[in-house]
Length: 85
Image 1: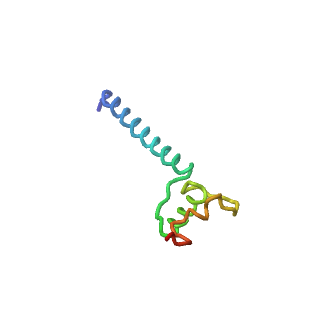
Image 2: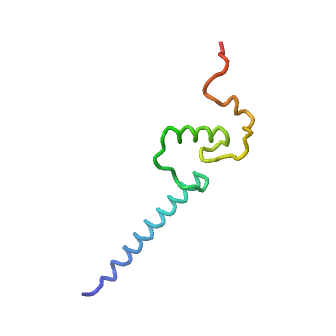
Image 3: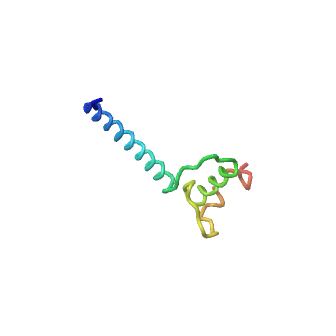
């Protein structure tokens, strides 16, 4: 049975386009996550830690190894320490 050579050109184009779009999507998501893969099955604890990391570093995937918070961290909470009345 002969091979329809004319069909290989569209098949090759489709394969290249799907491969390129998947690769660009992967690169885009990793660039947004500081080079780390995306997170799955995020629970309340993970959300709380991501919010804390965002307050400490400015990015939800960033982490710090020093215990000193950046300037302004003590006032970046949603809870108010003193009433503003």
